[in-house]
Length: 197
Image (tube, rainbow, N blue to C red):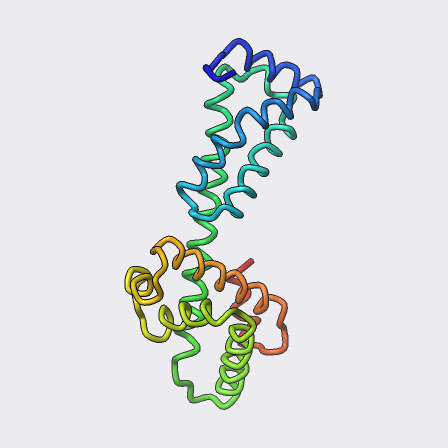
C-alpha cells in the first residue's frame, strides 16, 4: 500500500475492530516507520520516539471496538501520536523545570540548622547520583547547571549537536528524578517529591 488507499485502510480497521491481530500487525508495519519519523522530529530521541509509537498503537488496539466509526485511519493514527508526543514534551518540560527549581533551592543559604542538614544531605545525594553517570554526561550537566551555559554553548564546547546536548540533559534529569524519588531519608527531598508525582 505505497499509495494511500482509504478503502483498504478502513477495511483493515474493521478487521482490527473484530480482534484480528494479523490486521493490526499489518497496520503497525504500514505506519510504524512514518510515525517514528514524525515523533522523532519533535522529541529528538529514537528511544523515546519508539516508546511513543508503541503507546500509540497500544491505544489503537485497546480502543479497537471504536474503530468502525473512524473515517480517516491515517488522520486518526497521527492524531494519537501527536497527542502522545505533546504529553511527552509537556512531561519532560515539567521535569526539567522542577529539577531546575530544586537545583536553585539547594543553592540558597538557609539559617535553620535542620534545613541546612537536609540541604547538605540533598546535595550529597544529587552529587552521588551524578557520579554514577559517564564523564561526558557529568560535564554537560555541570556546564548547564553550574556554569549556566546554553545548550548551544555546550554543544560548541563538547562537539555535539544542540539536540544531543538537550537529550543528554533530559536523560540526566530523568536519572536524578528516579534516584531522588527512591530516596526517602531526607525530609527536604520528600518535600520535593510532590512536584514529581
